[in-house]
Length: 198
Image (cartoon, rainbow, N blue to C red; front, side, top):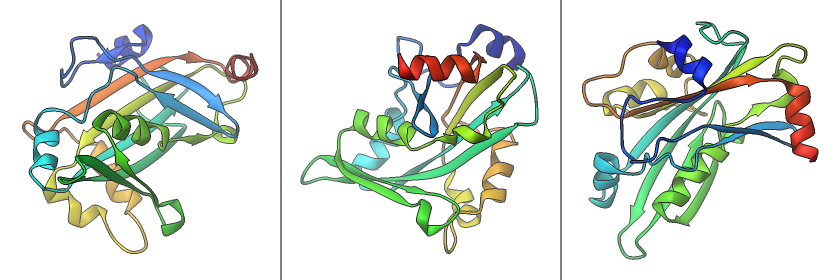
């Protein structure tokens, strides 16, 4: 099933939240491979309601690159945790990205729900130098609403536990835990470079 999703370059609909199927867009921006998914709405449903009720919520994201459409082992990956809170007076959101150490931490505020979605995806990047130079590759986004029971194992000082986060992505989701999985490929680095300069 994963292989066919890669080959088609489409969404694997594990949690349908929109009427238009999201698609993964991949591009180079300077030294980084970045993604976007204009129709992906993860700030919706239960996570959105919990945030508006004053409960801090979080999403964990993993961006992987493989050289085979059904590969189980990634060539390179980026993982992050995004903590989201809601200001009931301003009716705006704040989001903080946690990485492996404090230097990877970033934050933004006064965002709409769609602004949070764009910001999170824009802050899940892979260094261009880590991409396969002479081979086609596939890109996958795995985004999940964080299970509150996992938080203690993920968050620490000075950042998040990358090993623990990767282990969470290797297991099935729990119950009704929202998850979004998008795949696209194949890409070639030379073609992405041309597009970025075109």
